[in-house]
Length: 388
Image (cartoon, rainbow, N blue to C red; front, top):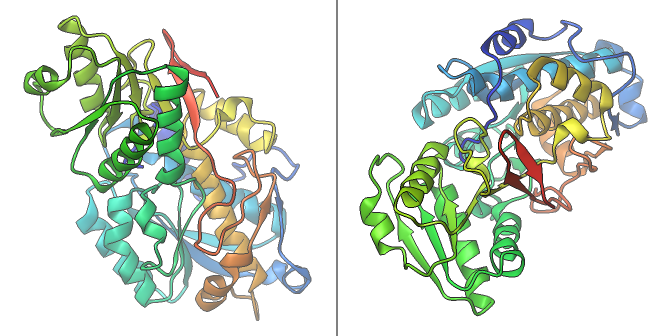
């Protein structure tokens, strides 16, 4: 995942940034999800304290910039209310890129009160900050970083609550080859690790299916893609946009259509941004179901819909990433305080039942989400329509 968000109202966004923890912002009186904490933790929950860092954008210029931070806050507020704990958020902005993320990781690692971290958001940011937090034995759970290599064992404290690109790539490949019956597929990617990793997986799937596939590297910052379009075979009937920028995807589709080229377009999850990538008839993937129709966590989803209205894929994973960290902290609380070392040891066996993502959250030995999947949507005139 690079940076996929759905747009929402700036006023509502600013309001949620301001609430913080202990604001009574997490919905009705019923618990939204069921957590597994253990008998020892239940005996001392009333006194449990500690800080959980969140590395996520919240100082950007777009209305979408605060979604992860907002819903990590809402999640912890919900958890504190339900368990009588007093965990606090330590917010760290990441809106200015990897240098800022590294600084955030160093600050959190140096703060002995911080027992775990939600984030970072993107695969690039995880690669930048991960070694710093690993050195401090500070576990971190990303709501959105999907590059496959992040769980190859080099990052010891990294977990994620979404499926990785080894799951997304076949979902896109099946759509291109099996559902759309593509006869010639073109993949466009950019230099971002997320984009190239996803493109690798899609290319392998399509080639293995015996369908001709070509690939082009593009610049996500370009404004004129005439040279790219010229190199796309005239008989290509499926174009996969494995890009880190929704704006670049939108420009490519518009410029191809203007030249009379109308293949089926499939975007990766970084293009799941309805106000920035919205060509009617194109397809896009997401690592979460449509939370507006979710059965699990109805109280939380009601709040989500009341504040945001639109489908925002970062909300559910950020809520769940915070929930799993708070649950691990509660399991290991001693003498009224959670510990960083305890969270590091507890995360592999921490489980959230009936999460807002519509499935249990538990981790494989590689720190991947068990049974994670990607969802396919088709873009309609004013919304994304669920396909499978």
